[in-house]
Amino acid sequence: MRVGAFVLGAQFPGQGPGEALHRAVRTAEVAEEAGLDSVWLAEHHFVPYGVCPSAVTLAALLLGRTRRLRVGTAVSVLPNVHPVALGEQAALLHLTSGGRFTLGVGRGGPWVDLEVFGGGLEAYERGFPEALDLLRRWLTEPRVGADGGPGQRYGFREVAVVPRPAESLDGHGTGPEVIVACTSPASVRLAAERLLPMLLGMHCGDEDKAAMVALWRREALAAGHAREAVEAAGHVSAGICQLADRTADARETLLKAMPGWLKQGLDAHVTVDGRVRAMRDPVAYTELLCELHPVGTPELAADRLAATSGRTGINRFALLAEGSGDLAGTEENVKRLGTEVLPLLR
Image (cartoon, rainbow, N blue to C red):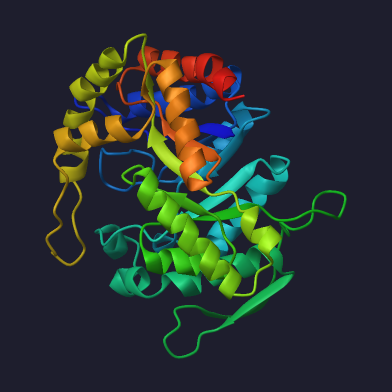
């Protein structure tokens, strides 16, 4: 089982963005010291829910600060960026880190980002498959062009891929791993047809995640992928982790801190077309997360992770450890995850 930290760069009420980003960097540094497998970096724009606007930029910093830790984006919002530009950045991080970078991509939401960055609703509602396929070609082929036919967003003459991510310094190797955030059957099918692992969100319980994994397997096999490759797919389950000597204390920590952050952050989202988006009740959502994920004693946390893995077949986890909103508390939480929970899982 591979356990990593999920880093949002959350700006809690009363905090500035610098404090949130310092806590994000320290989470990664402590995660490596504590023996965690990875960190996964979220990307948001114009909202204090998360103040990292470029997951690949923060990934570059953290890859330079660490030596063993895998660093992934969870996720880079593909409709907001040209797939070739993102592919070039991914290639650079993959090659310079010795293969420690994972590129997670997602569709994002119908937010004002689409207006600011010029993608528009078309990029969000229909353009994701085209953008994903262009990105994958850039990460695997020596030369790439796009014909820009009817209904397509991208069209350009064939150009050389430099640097080639599928070549290591000795002329061999593969490109960076690509994963896809999946929240619907349509996105599950899209990922399965391309044999790309899924990132499943923290709002889902084990039953929902197991159903999505089962659907992914069926669709991947129907697309003609080999059973061995399908069974070997390394899906990632996002969640939250808060540890304490008593489960009641862990829950209390989150219930004191998270609702204020969730309300401030989620209320700041603005839709690109004025559509009404119902936001979750912050207290009820925090309580749900406490029920679904490893929140409690180290023993309870290990049991919940093992149970999720057994029910879903997922063996990679990205766990939000900054739910207290406090730097020292986050560092202690990450240390305990590595030193007290991981040994129980092994």
